[in-house]
Image 1 (tube, rainbow, N blue to C red):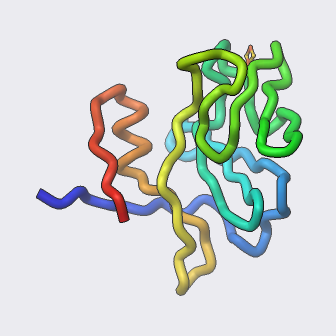
Image 2 (cartoon, protein in one colour; image 1 turned 30 degrees about the horizontal axis):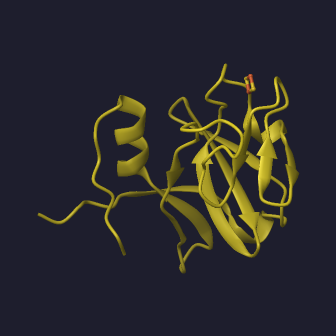
Length: 123
Ligand code: FES
């Protein structure tokens, strides 16, 4: 059975600045949108440690460091380079060619939010 893909718009692609994280809140879910190396990435927007806003973190190379206690995450994979097994959720995203908006796979976000197991579809 094919996986459903429902997009929700987050931000206009033209407004993203390379390596400047943007916080987006939709339906009480905080996400982070980042253009890095020319690619848009969408991750959970809060730190897995104690929930600080990751958009306020510092990006050095591929590593985003939480502003509160310094946990760090590789924005290419979501994995922490310094804490084994730790990481942030990353979500499929794309640019809507008609509107220019970056959209996120809302089905993935909801699955993550509810803690349900989810089989990610390879596109
Ligand atoms: S809340 Fe991010 S490191 Fe503690």
